Length: 292
Ligand SMILES: Cc1cc2nc3c(=O)[nH]c(=O)nc-3n(C[C@H](O)[C@H](O)[C@H](O)COP(=O)(O)OP(=O)(O)OC[C@H]3O[C@@H](n4cnc5c(N)ncnc54)[C@H](O)[C@@H]3O)c2cc1C
Ligand code: FES
Image (cartoon, rainbow, N blue to C red; front, side, top):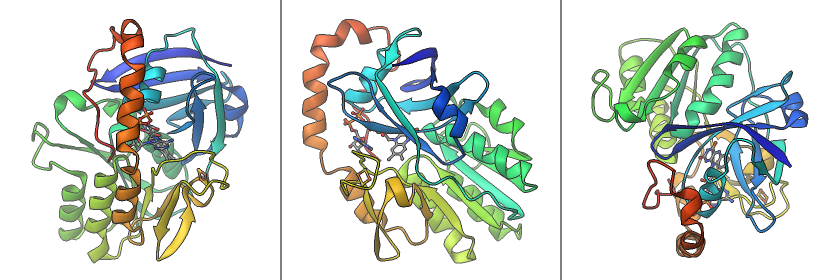
């Protein structure tokens, strides 16, 4: 069992959790994720590592409330326990001396972008971070991102923080105005990662994205997380989760992520009426969020 040490609603529908998991905290590296099961009848679902503290033996995750499993997780309080956390899983990010690196992030992707930016900077890279948010009310952890970046920019859908509404717009303008980028990383919603990859492609800037297909076992055995990259089938849990954004077949990924929408809605609707009391205190409860 893994005890929840901290829980915080960051912005509507987005929760930060810190849990005790010393074995995972000891081995975690940027780019990796865990698979959780909230209780004995719970489904397994992956979340990216947003941080870890080897000394305290804790790990951090940020998650959006999407459906039954994330709602169940959100209904737990500090002091409650998560039944299973497996990890760290997936290949760690290749941290090298690239030069000028841009880290684009949105929603839950802000979490894993922080250990990534920190590690890239420690390796001597110049790190520019761009956080994309729907509007000012959805911005969080800007201070943490600033701490690990040489420059931090905000792209906000409501234009509250300058002219860029999307991270991809920032990238295009930055490259068009003659700035050099040696590598781009994009973490977060699928559309954001796809748009960032499209923005860098004409300039030939290698772009690494962290894919989020449906996963089940997380060990390469079930094939559920397969994606098409450069015309080849890859299993995200063992070959990824990071891939070259210019080679990802985004259409296939989006289709596969939406394959079980009806069943997911049914599972949510069956669980919710019996648990209304547990979730009554959760601010910003969504109707049901979109998968991508
Ligand atoms: C490597 C990886 C890292 C991820 N990191 C994060 C993170 O840090 N924060 C975060 O909020 N989300 C993350 N996700 C997505 C997260 O796993 C899903 O949002 C979650 O599983 C939804 O489950 P649910 O039962 O609440 O919703 P459901 O109603 O079951 O599903 C809603 C949507 O979530 C996706 N989904 C459902 N089940 C799974 C599953 N078993 N595996 C993956 N996706 C699923 C599908 O696209 C589905 O349409 C990550 C996914 C992957 C593959
Ligand atoms: S989740 Fe089963 S092969 Fe990746």
